[in-house]
Length: 266
Image (cartoon, rainbow, N blue to C red; front, side, top):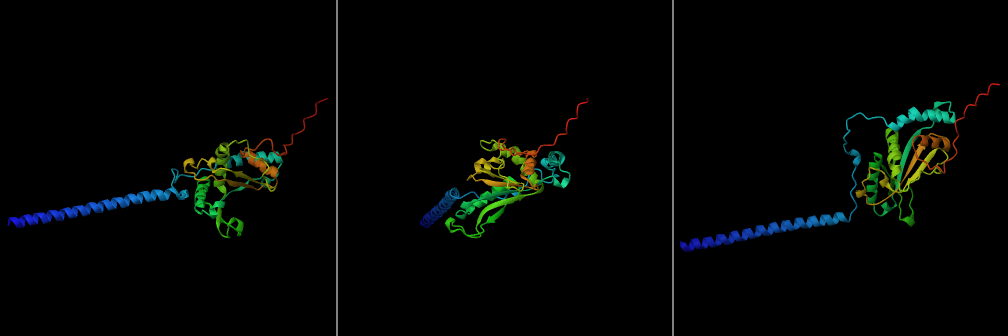
């Protein structure tokens, strides 16, 4: 009986030891696999560009509250229209120029080789303008650039209404003073039909862009489309709206005709 009990005890001890050893081995294997996955994931993310996120669908603190009218639009209605009518002697209210739309265009030539760069540009344009951009495709193939017809090589946003006035207000009040070595906007970029286009070298002048999240610096073209028929009228409109033009290159703008002084009594 004693020998049977000793044999049973030895067998049970060996079986328990083997089971414990196998459990430890399995636990170590799982831990090693998890560690390998963690290191591999970090290494994989380090060599890839940042994933794009659609910030236009994010909730904000003012959700559900009534939308206030843009202050620049109210300034145009109350002040600018009367000033332009007096300056250019407009007799009809429909002759007074106004801002029609703003087009923000960004070309990404490197998107031909790295398509994910365009996703980041689209995300940044959505943050700057508050509207989802439209991806632009190549109209024809160019073999020297390795470009094929239909490839996505840029993005653009067309702003109208309240978003247009809000963007112009932020651009004039906040973005322009943040331009490096800023001495005013040039006045030679009018196209002869009352439209004004400027080029921005860095997207970081807009306060919506986080400097730490920027992977690549890129520029953009901003076109202000007006209903003016002459460049002088368009420039006067943009100047009244707060556009900081460069004083040296300022074109000649017709001044308001002053009434003649009454003749002195004899």
